[in-house]
Length: 379
Image 1 (cartoon, rainbow, N blue to C red):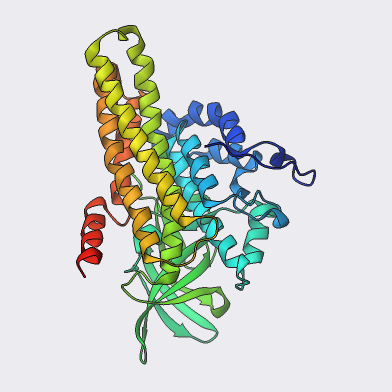
Image 2 (image 1 turned 180 degrees about the vertical axis):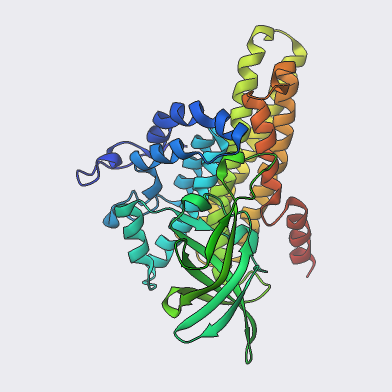
């Protein structure tokens, strides 16, 4: 996919495409990826490079100082970043999808959206999301208080939490008249009662710093409540959020698979005439092509300015499931092609082999996706 941007003298970065900028900082990301993976530390240098290249404000509308990137462009951006460092691609995907959804809200004149987007563009703030861990059944509770709510709970899988500025999160409110509700909120990471608990010691995606965030009796003013949704269902706002978010996340995981393929291809060249090597490489190439088509199809359904649709949501979940499953297969095959060298820590293929496993844990899981597709079909 080729992304082109029109030159704009007010924003020098815009004269260069998003993918060109991502490729240009790729060596910086790659140079530190193995160390952060080994140590389980945040990809700090990568974020410095992303900010300097103007990529953290890619989803901000042009009029507010960004690139106005579409969902498809952001998916392609994260895919390119993952060729160099999977943790950078996944962590920044969380910031990108929250920013992209905030731009969606801004186009509809929703309160608070413009102010947040201006801060992303002007101050370089990083947005943290807990949506994947919360989704339809959030962890934590909200209790009504004067002027807002008091919230408490533990949020898991909060990527880049130690470097974030504002957290987009959810809490359950037991409303005496309406029953259980889900409140979407924007909570400053610096607020009293917010603490990052360094729990992130995982198999893969170790550089994302997806530590737990613990909130203890944190006050959230009423104006920071972005949505008041029914509990336990994928309602129209969540259909849009998930469709934007997981399209971008899926791009990152597809890029991880492609990185493993490219490393395996380089390892295979000395044995290029071996029919077994040819077949293994051909199998990887086929699986990646089909996974790429799945993402392209989902992005076509989502479009540039999605409206709520359960079918759109299922299209994105189907593409994500395809990428997760084919990605594991591709990384397994890459190890076979590269041989024993890929079994050592420090190998790009070995890191991709571990990183791709994280794809199955985002909602909906591949199995849950199949169940939901079938449930909708037979009803």
